[in-house]
Length: 177
Image 1 (cartoon, one colour):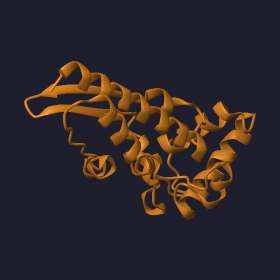
Image 2 (tube, rainbow, N blue to C red):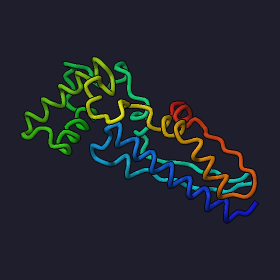
Image 3 (cartoon, rainbow, N blue to C red):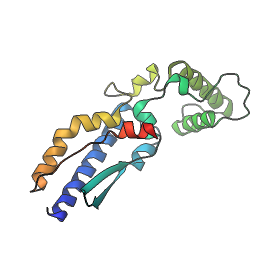
């Protein structure tokens, strides 16, 4: 096996997968701050069993991929809590998006979103209007499923020896953490 050609092919696959993940995130309407897209990266390692290509992103990407059930929304209406990381994050997001201005309006909007999340989970049914492809979850799964043949084609055209390709279920593994 030519190590150089294998590494070159895996770099090509890594760049391809990252581009497809970025496209899918944008098509699903997940571009609020661009943070998740900007954290996408890949790494190639070699060990005795061969090469491994791993894709990395901020941990919250798993929640964007899977969504969050309403029972797991960290908000309890009328709890009387003095502060909430969840509400603070919503306030910051609203400010970044420029959806509302003025402290009171921003805070009221954050609580309205929290109440909606608590009723429906995330993403909400209303958030589908931001999607260009009708999906709001499954960006990892969709990219891997939709592009397995292209990945195989890249590898077989670039590498002269036989290569075995395994897509570990990244989502399933991350959920177990």
